[in-house]
Length: 410
Image (cartoon, rainbow, N blue to C red; front, side, top):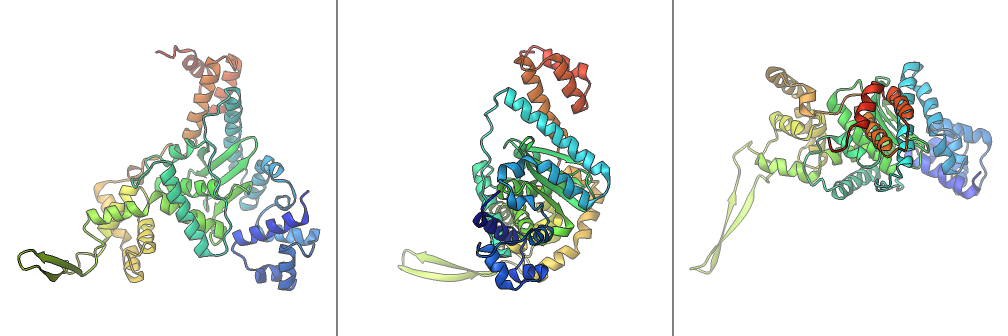
């Protein structure tokens, strides 16, 4: 159990992450607002019933408030299954997620056998936020820092799943409810896990991978996060969205593209020419042709294909960076159908815009296969254990054994 001060801090942090005011919490508990203030400062104790109501209000298990963090992380898969059950009664979804987590646990076990310490610890950017403005700013700043740390520059990210996997995070796609885009889990036995909805199209999956990576960087204090339509207004989700947008569409990259399109310049530019002979200066004004600076649907379409994101994502990113006004953004959004007609005309598919790994668990299986083969070559696992792993990986045991027995020089 934790002390009263730590409990108060956790309750306040969880309320702020959910973007709720003390007034809203007080109304849910049928208490005066001052009572909520006293609870969050440790002045007033909180009853078991009140704690249960707060857990329901914040959408998390009550254990998250009371148990030491290692224990919560250890039970992450249990509480995650409970959360999935609340979202959908379809057992197939829980089975699919359980299979991914099982693969991740096998991967962790293999890493321990190999004493694999090559993975650098993933940075933890946990920070408090009090408003939507805080959430958006923090997501943007952390995304910029990650691009710097990963030496990504301003270029588009090709295979976002591989980039995340290279940071020691297990990534996979699997069947999830339609309104669920993805989830993040911090489990003691499985490690850091990101799962996205394999049923969504490639461009949306890319954004979901980036979104859940934001949770891995900013929200690891929670054992899991499930992203679905019902919690889109929470501050943690707004922050993860801002992170994903900035990671996939960096400000400098957007501005580079606008320059290449000869867009984004001011409507009037003052130019001063120095006359050496007369020791005087002459000022003039350059005005671009009327309408030449307007961002068109073709420009948005080109940038969407370049960064591997949706048409709408580019529009909102341009709007947030100040390159579009509200009327211009609305007009461009209404012209999306032209982009779709152009794609049909050119026979362009979403997967051609942003080629992803397999929609399901190809990236994860590749990670585990590599570890399994290396463990076999070092004689850390037996042929029988390798065959067992092959069955979990859904590959032919004989084929995996043949690959593992091949001479490394072949």
